[in-house]
Length: 269
Image (tube, rainbow, N blue to C red; front, top):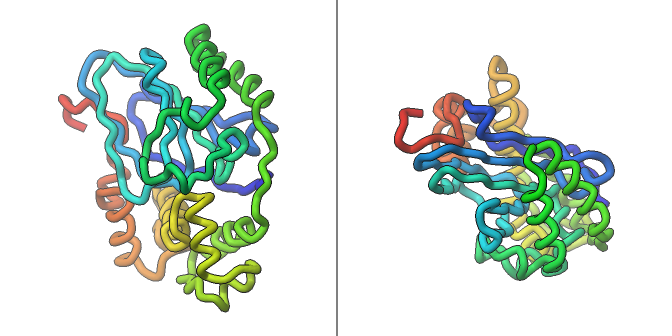
């Protein structure tokens, strides 16, 4: 399985009781990046989600029917819901969803969200929901679910040309890749073939995929090392960084840094 040092972030949540995350244990981490959970009280809530190139499996613990796979997107999405509510999420690694989902991402990416039971084995969907219902604590849910998923994952056949492109993109975040036939020949592919491959398996164009990678790299720097200019490692200058950031996050870097991405709409954030 493709192993990349890629752990995207979503943002800061001021109430740690309402939003929990846990990195998937080895060897499940080859396919799954992390588990996450939202648990909110009564009220009108929203989650401000940003692009990360990953597929998420989101399960409403109050309704088996509300059990969906979310395709990668290229602009900020605000998911609104009414509390009290509990959602459990599985964020897959890049291409990690292929270990469970046989349908190419390109076949359903246009739908943005699709019923998990339409793409995953029904017994897996049912067993996952049962595990989440029978375990109260977040940590115990993650442990039991990790055991289940390890029994279900199948080693997918990944196109080495696509892997070459992903690795190259990660190591050239600070450059403007032309992705011409000449450049793509280094991956053993033409520019047209690359567009077809990324659309089929990543659900995005090569350009969009690399732009989101760069945005995520800068976002992590913004949140983890705020004392260092976030744009330095991956953008030509601050102006280009701010323009790209507003495109993907929906707000300026300064506003995002002070934003709780999970918030009660009836209260000041």
